[in-house]
Length: 170
Length: 170
Image (cartoon, rainbow over all chains, first blue to last red):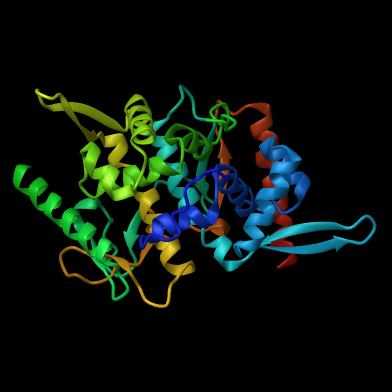
């Protein structure tokens, strides 16, 4: 990994990116969330090299998104089960899927998400669980918490100033 | 970019990852969604090298997430305005933020998302816009569309078989 680490940043989105690690990891999680759990299932689905896959699975285990379990003795074989933390990554994958469907369309649709009960296509949105309101940049604000560094507080102030400007100019 | 391209894949989530490009791009979008638009604002916020930032902004312009606009003549200076496609990436950033807040907590909170009207903390969930139902792996299914390749159809069949197995064993 040649990336800069974002872990030290106060922003949970940056920490999330840092923890998950790379593009492959998100696609591995996508497949696991669809029910895959064995090395060869991931390998076939992704067309990924086995060294890369081994590394990414090991990373996701160490970050607590997968639990590795032996399911065969001879030869020893392992499966990778999503932890609650890994399962909870689903909204990120769904949000990517929804954005890709809307903004990178093809002439004809190859893959959609559907409601399992009715088979109707899902259109997904992110809402506030408390109010049910759709969450947008315009109705949402960053709030520094008790542990915010001075740099983070300055950043939040800058962002608020930019947003005031934006509201005035629109 | 040394990554394998996922563009040829039928899955819109894989295409989304391929279009956006890398971790930095997501953090640039995060900042733009908070109101930043100038080169030096991104540079200062991210602590990113100016060559890398130039490359990522150029990429995001070419992918249609930003529009570049000159705002000063001498010296020529440009700002980067989110297009509707770029603005629509917000749910992905929010989903990452929510996951990071929940699963990579610190002793004390540094940064939260709030409801701008009330200042109350937001807890966000992904729901089906039609039914309001919370979207989970268990109530959602992949559906091949008319343009699905034979490989994609096989993949969907494999996933359905795995899910049947999962339902039986749980």
